[in-house]
Image (cartoon, rainbow, N blue to C red):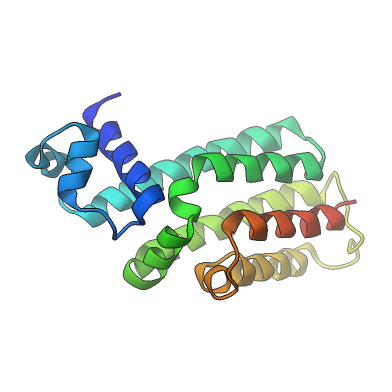
Amino acid sequence: MDIRDRILKACRDLAVKQGLRGFTMDELAQRAGVSKRTVYRYFDSKESIIEASLDQFMLGATARVEDLLSRSEHPSVFFKSLLNYLSSQGQFIINPSTLGDLRFYYPQLWDKIDSFRIKQIRKVLNHLMTPYPTRLQNIDPLILSTVIVAAIQNVLNPTFILENNLTFEETAQQLSLILTALFQ
């Protein structure tokens, strides 16, 4: 693993335990096994490290979605596999501390994640609507996908999750059940 990747991994590891604001650059450098000066050689700020970590995660998530869609599995299998991926690979981003930090301290990064999420949701829904017509097949696909995206945005977000004392996993699992029911 190269130095840049070690720094990003250290960021993710520390975020799981302490949230995004809970660790210092000194802790990050120590966790990555490099000097603080080396960290700043690769990144100009803590925020740029966090953003690069998010970008790396989103790139991996995009590849996972593409892989799952190419398999043309039943929606219940698709949603379960995707949820497992997010729970295992996205721990640094889906824990309550990180969600709160994104909400309060890095709203521009949350907006970036939200835009990414909307794009991926639309891609998945458009892919699933053809081979698995829903019980709502008489509804315009644009309207249906917009309603589903809005529901996901309003439920799978830091405010809703934190205010209702939920976890990302619980919330995503419930949404997965709803979406699977639509495609039965």
